[in-house]
Length: 358
Image (cartoon, rainbow, N blue to C red):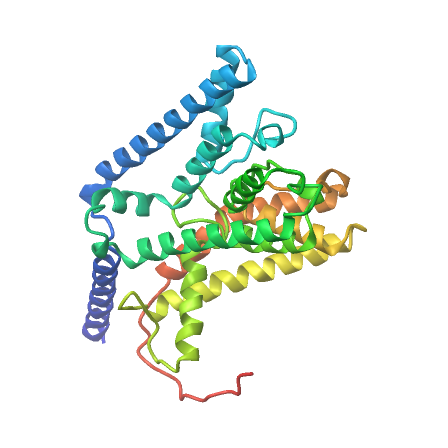
């Protein structure tokens, strides 16, 4: 019995090691010896990006708005760091609404948000293999494709919905409308800045923003949400089912069933948590559903956007939002990691039966 037990342990460990090696090859994961180089790359990208954005903002605030060099430098650095880390904090009482028509302020901030929102594994991979995109991992391809698609979808949706809304961008020129539609599309994916009044947005815009906030940015980055790769992965699962394919494929690669189950678990847990929290807050306040749902998703995805009702909520509802911020920032990562680490081989299978679906 002892020999059989020992043999079973060795087989189990060997299978786990094999799974890790396969996953490492498929995702181009980093070796232990690469950690120092990756950390240096992350540090370099962070410092360079924040320094460039801070410099642009400092110069613009000084020459365009008459701020003293010291004040301009402090504000520029603060907003550059806030944008790159998807914090959304601003030193101005109206956030970025005073710069709604200034592309030299909004576009550098958007660039910092987009770069950091890709996630450091994608940034590192693109920098290492920028000459050979065909060698990029499926994770990098999904993140880049999803980011571009969501940016365009958000831009188009906000522009169409808010084009004639005098409370937001309706009174701006065509260029100003396009600038603010793009900015809102960028910051909705967990950055938290706002250049227009969120409380004046139309219900369809709030609904679109809810989706962008819930999806969030790339994995292992500064963004929140369920992550772009998780969302796209489930999209490929649905597409494979529609086409009647037994394998889920993307970019001529099969997606392993473990990743599919993990993505489904993360999404369902997130939706369930958002639903329960929304019901709880609705029972504590008289605020309308669309605004409460917006606040809940914004808190869970650690975005920071608000329709302006947060201060009017009772303390118990505010505590729920605080809890959501913590769970949303730590919980999805913890759940995904725990699901991956708990994978184990079971030496038996139950009889199969097919329930009715739909």
